[in-house]
Image (cartoon, rainbow, N blue to C red):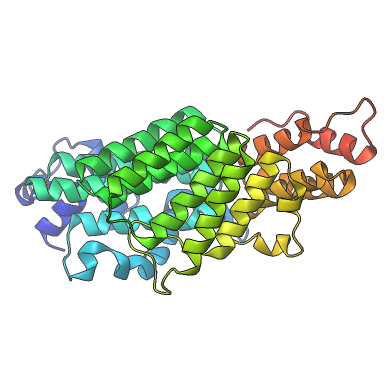
Length: 384
């Protein structure tokens, strides 16, 4: 590795790396040493730094959690390389490398508690900020701002999963601002739509609708098909949060129509997920749960819609439980809610647990049956 390559990884110039190598036993910046340790795979103890990182057990053995997550991100990075704007034309550099990690950190989200993954993501955000401060030229700063936008959006998603709504709003807001600095209308629309989706799920219908309209305005006439279909589904969630069944139905119908015409190739960056008619059907289940409409929730193949990773499935199962509850099927509702609660506890997901509590609050009875009492017993005293 050349001094220039190491400098790019650490956010330093080539000459600064040269000075570090010549410094011998003089004092060093511990932050720079820690970044070099992580990049070069040198144990912190050999760098003269205390190693206080938490451990994770894998197959009975303790593994450094940051190394474990870093390895998972590296493995997950390979499939997304071709989708990156810089990589598509053969360019390389800091922005490409940092973007790979930012996208790849989304993959362990389905198998790792957000509180654990958040440490790695926040460290990555600090690295992006450091590199951005030393970037040469406006074009490079814009590319790095786009990377920072993606990483901030992921931090918002993790905060939402932990039930920390204040931090989630802050991170999503940072993602939108960074996308504007990057001068990328599609990225700005995506991040604004993500915040709209969050507000819809948390019950802020007016704010969600305003944000969705703002996302569409930022795209103007250059609106990709996947953005159109997805934003219609977000509008459906917002109308459902506001209790407007008719408007929610219209938005979902528009989303379904748009999803049917989507091309088969992967969606354009910054979309890192496939949006299709199955996603629209799952969104309709969520809307039906919010509106108290069992006929929207309890289709014959409803559990087949519970795709994605375990936390996503648990949230949809709770929506299905809400549909059963609205239809008067109490035993089925709390059996499903209990299943989802297991997942919430396993992954320490504040979002899943709060949704489980919302399902429980929707049922009132002076003499609840045993299945409800058992559910209450499990919820009692749960703190994350």
